[in-house]
Every structure is written in structure tokens, then in C-alpha cells.
Image (tube, rainbow, N blue to C red; front, side, top):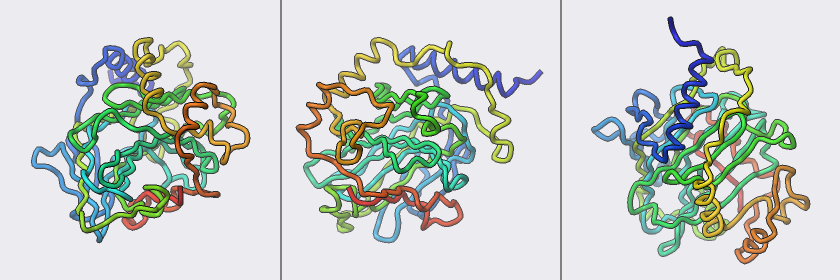
Length: 335
């Protein structure tokens, strides 16, 4: 007898939970590029390594580049080891994210890792974000510095997405947990999504609000991806809701953030978080309802320069049309 779709969902979930609780993701299956992904845009600016499991994405004055998963997924664990470009990278944006903007142009979901380049001598910054049901008017961005140089070597960046929570990881350390709350309503991602990786020119906003732009004298800018993990519930694009319908409650499933991991997450956030939308009074006179305000955190973040996002900021006007490479690069307006 074959395994039912529902049994498969619960099987991968408990497997991922066990792996994360064990503190190692080395047991998760790493797939060859051609088994799980396809070329999105950029022509020969996407190069597959001879081992078939590593990919180089480059940005030059002609184009950026990117790839996308062959399947849609409803929940799962998604990961890649990434090495970012070095030296002068102002204006360069590398993104590792999930989206369904090509299917749901007016109510898309999204889960983002974005890496924002900088001038020589300044650190790369990481930005995470979550959209649900087209909630692009409410950006849920957070920004962080890192405790290492992400251009020196490969580091693992992972997304765990379940029915009740989203957790972002760096080198198996949770850095952000987004819990589904009643107050979020449809703003929590709940529709099948594809996984994307791109590199592109974000000169208009990525570094100091566009003050420093991409300098193609230093191109090509190359981002390397390896250890690609797609571990989740693949969904038929036609029967996207029926195959992964899970009517059983997940409340009994233990959280993947153990007490020891939570200590590490809280330590990371104290030391490295530089911005949270929950404390941005320029954007939100009243914090979005899911925010839990920590007075000490609010005071600490006041010491950093404020980060603002343009009114009506619509980050995905291109909707990831796979047949139109020029519309596949991630877009943003001014910071």
C-alpha cells in the first residue's frame, strides 16, 4: 500500500522536527539542481557546478539571474548554503525566498530572506519578511547584522514553514519566529508557494536608501548556492488545495524552538537585530496587532538609524512570471 498524502505530510513534519531538535540538519536530503529546480532568468549568468548540486548566480551590467523550484509546496523545510559576493557590493541584492506571486497576483504569499550589499568595509545585512494574502501594505521586515562575514565561506540559511509558525535559521540557529495569531487573519502565508533564489540590482533602495549604487566596475557579482534542501509537501498545481489538505490540528506538535535554541535566538536578536517593523512609528502609528512590544528592545533599537520604507511600497509588481525573465528580478522602492 502507498502512503497517503496526509501521512506524507505528517511524516516529513515529524522528521524535520526530530532533525531540528537534534541540532543537526545534515540528515536532510540534499538534491541535485536538476532534480528540484529550473532556470528562472539570466541566461548563462546561472552556472551549475560540475557536481550538479551547486549553482552560481551572477549579476553583471546585462542582467541578474535566478532559479526556482520545479514544484509548489504547502509547508516544509527549505534550506541552502550560500556564499555572498565580496568587496564592494553596494546596491546588490541576493534573495532566497518563497512566493506564489505568479499564481496569485492580487493576494500572494511570501517568506523572504534578502541579503543587502554594502560599500567596501561595511557589512552585508540580512532582511527577513513575511506577507500573506497580498498584505503588502503591512511590511513585516526585520534586519540584522551577522557575527561572521558571509562572503568568506558558505553559511546555511533555512526557512521552516508550518501551518502555525515560520522560523528563520542561520547556521541552524533560529533568528526569528513568526507565530500565526488570530489577529493576523489572512496575513499569515497559507497558500502553496515556490522557492526562489535570485541576484539583482537594487540600487534604488538597497544601500543607504539608494545613496550607494551598484558599480559594475566590480562585476560580475557572484553568489554561490549549495546543499539545496526542498523537504516539504509538493502540491499539484491544479489540485493545489486538495492534496495537502490537513484537517487535523497541529496544536499537539511541539515547537521546533527548544529552550536552549530560544536562548540562542534571544541572544542573537539582542546582539544583531538592527530594525523591527514593530517599533517603526514612522510607518505604523500603532504597532500591527501580532507585535509583542519589549520596552528594552524598543529602546535599544532607537540607537540605530531609522529605516523607512516608501509609501505604497509594492515589492513584487513583477509577480515572478517564469516566462518573462525581465520580470523575475525582485523589485523594491526606496528605503
